[in-house]
Image (cartoon, each protein chain N blue to C red):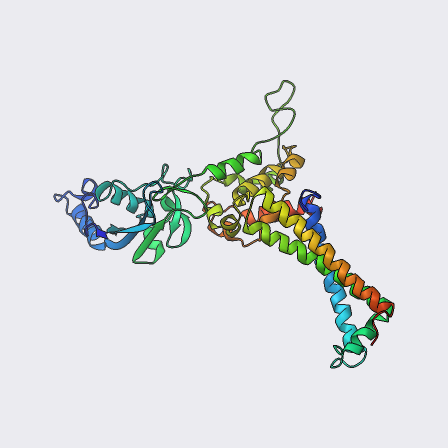
Amino acid sequence: MTKGGLLPKGFERPTVLASPSDSGVQEKYEEVKSSSKTIVLRISKFNPEKDQRTTFLEFTVPYQRWTTVLDAILEVKSNHDHSIGVRYSCRQATCGSCGMIINGKPKLACFTKISELDSDVVTVEPMNNFPVIRDLAVGFERMISTHKRIKPYIIREDSEISSGTKEFLQTPEDVEKYIQFSSCIKCGLCNSACPTMAADSTFIGPQGLAQAYRYIADNRDQGKDERLKIIDERHGIWGCHFAGSCSQVCPKGVDPAMGIQMLRGYLLGYRK
Amino acid sequence: MSSIMRESHIMKIHYLTALVAVGFVIIHIMIRFTHGSFANSLEFESVIANYKSIPYAVVLEAMLILISVHGFNGLRIILLELKQGNAYERAVTYGCLAAMIALIAYGSRTIIMATMGMVEA
């Protein structure tokens, strides 16, 4: 099913560039218009309440060097098919809402430029290992519950606001041990890429395990034993086969596979 | 097994049995190359003769135990990843434990009988 035209309304950016009285701006406008290429955007459509199987809708969408996959999806949603289900918010790889499978790989749609995909066809599907709510939107219940399970907060008796205590100071070396893991935006791409998540419905997953390491490695935290007990099970830390795909797909540069190996060090006794 | 022991202890045993088994398998292969004819090593008389050497029988018994423990725990890990559920997981865990004990018992019986001369060449 193909919908859409070569230059749908709204893609010509007239408010920015259409001022014929200024020859420089007019030239720029012509340049941008002529440099516009098109791709075929294939969007997965599936409503679990109605549909038996997934179908793909195809749209011809123009793009510029800076057009992201999310821009293209929203263009289609605005001008061609309002029913497309997609979750997004910040458009700057901060909120972690727009994770999806783009040309077979888990990526953030707002952080993936079409021009970088090097393909005339861009296929977008919902993330693997998550239940589909509708089309590209998936349910995060499992990930949020495993995230909560590992107690993602500093555990200690006193606090910075207790009387008699002061700010908990850390050296740059202390911070270095966990700082990359605190960049996690809970987008779920690592869980989507994980082969164990696909097979084991009770596996904690790389997101939860990496967060367990983030707090265990933080020298302000005193909940190490508590967390290690939670993850020391068959469907916890030991479910990981070290495929490393979680680290490959993380848009924030977090390395969950490394965090998991560090946690194993605590449990096997070669890290204190 | 996970209800009997902590998973980290099981995994320590898993890794350790693999490492030690590699050492014993190397000894086993070295003995095969250095004692007697390698080509005839699988003949019935040669196999029975091996068990007459107590140190070699000990190596075989150690290999039997190490590989059984490692192998059946590996099987349990694979089966637990295939499907989940309390009843299933308990069945897999205790099933693998029982199969491991049965295999070690049967193999040990063979080694002991052959070592004591109860199996004649």
